[in-house]
Image 1 (cartoon, rainbow, N blue to C red):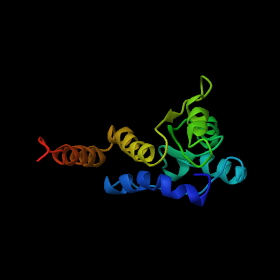
Image 2: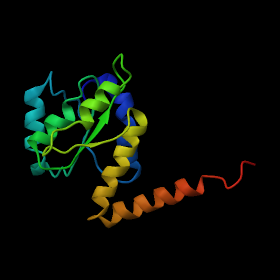
Image 3: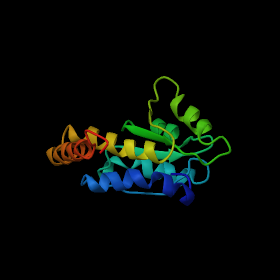
Image 4: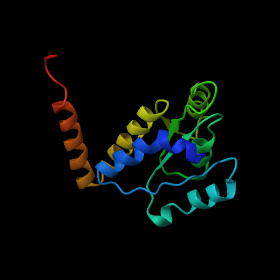
Length: 151
């Protein structure tokens, strides 16, 4: 995440992970304004048990790409609508990564953040039975909440 103002857009990712019982470590880090903090955090992540990154950024949105360049761990990018272009610039910057530096890119803003949290859980569910069960229960509840008829 590039700034504290972006927290409101990224909050659904953290909330979704919490609902599913997945621990997360939320930080405010900027590829441009805190490059050393970013480098140190990403390059030591595996030592701390971190298995993937969810990066939210607006404007030029370099956070996810720079993160992916520094680690072989999966990187999920969430474009944020913090610019005059309502996040379209961030979407294009996040999705247009050069071959060899993959970033899974989600929708702009809160819906994208929520989906990034769900996708992160799905990745982790492959090796964690408790996350798989929580994700299955989440989806079942989501399905049950959709009425079959409008009345």
